[in-house]
Length: 72
Image (cartoon, rainbow, N blue to C red; front, side, top):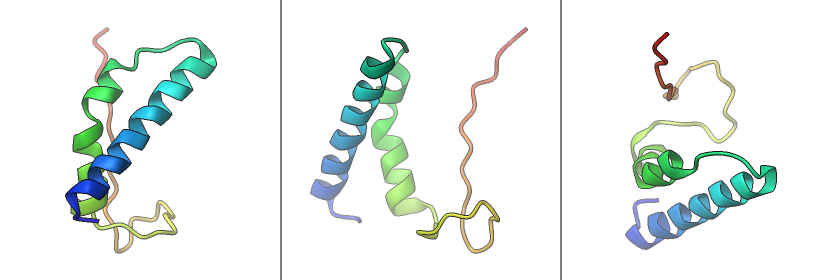
């Protein structure tokens, strides 16, 4: 999916989904998710090697973890 318009459209849908999820539970902080949508969509669609039937075994595909370190 290296077409720029397709990436833009997919990113727009991801943003809509983020806002719908936050609205549905009437809670959340969508700013961070909205702010990194382009980066994550491009990474997932054009950079990472992935299998459509994602199995978490890591064989022949990249696995990406996003985590925020909390200081205690």
